[in-house]
Structure formats: structure tokens, C-alpha cells
Image (cartoon, rainbow, N blue to C red; front, side, top):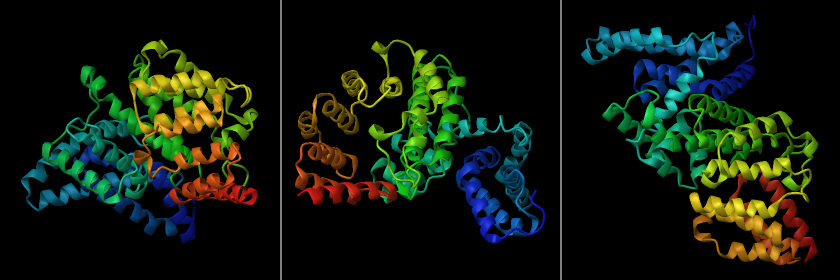
Length: 423
């Protein structure tokens, strides 16, 4: 532990860091005790507030996560003890059950055991008794620690809608007493797709942050990859689990080259491939090799195969765009969506020229992507390549208005200025 007083500004920074890294772990462990999500969040919030109060005087612990977990667990038991003394029979029974649960909670000194509670939390939040959209929203809130605004952007949905989904999901879990456990057998297979969707959304928020000054949030990418590896260990023979693990490893291999030294966006075509993380590429390709035949591939396997095309290409020019177009066509067959069609159209433009890409973009349902900045960005790029500067400028302006990420705004503004200078 740091000895002596610690400046409050430093404490606030360390608590914020601990929140990003430890929030899900602490909530998951406390929830095993109190069995109520709102109570668990309130208790964990109290533990973080206690850190803000105590750490300036006592110093920041060597392991903030262990301190927070221990503090939150104590607060949870204190809450139940108080309820028992108050004579509430239900809370007294909960207290007795909590004492038994405490014996099963992993020792916080063993970090390898703690992720199991996060996995338990994910499967509970993704229970089939919840509406599909609420499962993902609640898990992002509890496991990812996302704000309502961040979840709304991930879903391209209004914030009040997301808030309602979270509240409704919590109420359903409480009222129906949905089990806080990892399922087994056929139930595990049936509930897997929703869990994979959650993990990948966490990864995507890290890989292309919707808000803030940073384009990449490496902590979220790492968290999603850890969860993906846990799922692969839990279900070693499930192709889509390995497909997701492969996809995240392959995409994360490029994370360090997605921005320049000033944090500005660097397109895939301009990235220094010698700086790609070869260890991640090797792990991703190994996962992909054990997913089974592509003829029966699911959406994560197909996306991993697309990422592998980029990983194997020695240069942008050497990329097998024709294969990528075919893989996107297969992906549209098993998981149709406007975003998949957008990516397929971009691949067509790169395989057959910008005019072909624009034609493919015209076939997309634009209303479904009206708040998605990458649609006008794709149009802008093809128009720019065709020398249609005025039209390209208009599309870059639209993309600039739709993104809240500062680095993407800088990129679009630069491209917009270049197009306006050409008119």
C-alpha cells in the first residue's frame, strides 16, 4: 500500500481506473450474497465512495480491486445483519443463505478465480426469461460498466429506451427469482448466442469507442477477450465460441496501429503492418483453425475468417477482396443486417472499384442506418475516389455530425476540408 497521504486528484484517478477494471467483478461477487441487482449496485457504489473517503489518508492499496471487493462484501453482510436485527424474516433467511454463499466466494487473492463470478453474472443477465434487447443492455451495464448513453449508441437507440430495458430486466430477475448461475448442457447451448453478442459488444465499444477523446479503449478490449477465452475454456467444442475468440484476437492485433502518436485515426490501408501484434494473430488463427468447416460456419466464424484475410495479407494491395466479398455474402445469409450489407458494399467497392461500391450502397436500407456515421463515410470515400468532390464533402459533413468520437470527428473534418479545397 502507498504510505502516507495521497493527493485527492490522484485518488480520484485511481478510483476511476479501478471502476473500469473492477466494477463487474465486485458487482458479481456482491450479487452472489444479496441476490438483488439494485442492492448490489448500491453496495458497490458505497464501496467506491468509501475508497474516495479513505484512500487520501491511508494511501491507495497495492491491489485496489481486492480492497474494493473485500469492502463491498463486508458492506453486503452488514446490510443483511442490520435487516435481520430489524426483524425482517425474508432478510434474515437471506442472511443465513449469504453466510453459506460467502464460503463459496473465491479468495480475492486468487485473481484466476474471480472471473467465474463475472461469467455467472453474464449468464444471469442473458437469461431467456428476459427480453432479448434487455439481456444485452443489462449485461453491458453490469459487466461492462457502460453508461446508458454508451449502451444507447451501441444499439443506435434512444437513451430512455435503454434505461427502460435495464429497469425492466432488473425487475424481471427480482420478481421471477431467476437463478444466478452458469447453465449446463442443452440450456447452455441455447443461451450462448445472447452471451456471445454481449461479449462482442463490449469488445466493439473498446475497439471503436463511441464517445470521448480515445478511439480505442484497450481495457474494454482486454476484458472482452478475457471473457471470450473463459467461454472457450467452458465450451471448447462450440465453434462459435472459438470463432468469437478468433475474431477478437485478430481485430485486437491491429489496435495499436489504429491511431497515430497523437491519437488520430489511421485507416487499415495506411497502418504499419509490421507493428501488428503477431502473438494475437497466431492465437486468432489457431482459434479459427479449430472452428470447423466454413460451409456450416456461424456469424462469428465468418467474421473471424474475414479478419484473417486482413491478417494474412502482407499489404493493403495484397488483400483478397474477392474472398472477403464472398464471406460477407455468406454472413448476410446467416445473420442478415444493414451493417453487414454496408460492409459487403465496401468490400465490393474495393474489389471492383468505387463505382461498383456506390451502386452496392444504393441497395442498402438507408433508414435502418440513418444514425450510423459509417454509411455516409463509405459513400464519401467512394465519391472522393471518383473525384466527385462536392458530393463527397456533403457526405463527410454528414458523417461528422453523426459521430461523437473526437478522433473520428477530426478524421472526417480533415477529409471534408480536403474535398472542399478540390471543388
